[in-house]
Image (cartoon, rainbow, N blue to C red; front, side):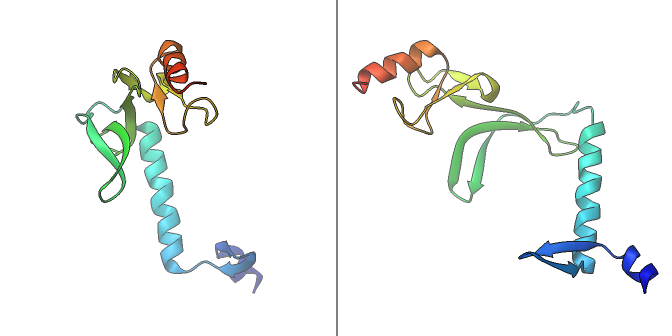
Length: 121
């Protein structure tokens, strides 16, 4: 019995420990292989900018570029809420939910401050 149970994978569901079914094993193997591929991929073939959706007809407000080999998102960009200048995700400033609304993106502190003045804060 010890040999059988030690070779089986386990997964947690609602706090209970159960034996992993074949689908879950395959899914775990697949995800591990995808992660290894993405870590080793040189990302030499990158797509054009395309709109990103979180569900059909529901845009995230971002444009993305993906690797055509491993499908990893390489870059994300959006536009400034104030001046509409395009800005990469890593460079943009978020609205704080206090002086500026959550979900707003700014290209600079200047645009963020101007928006705060417009909102009377």
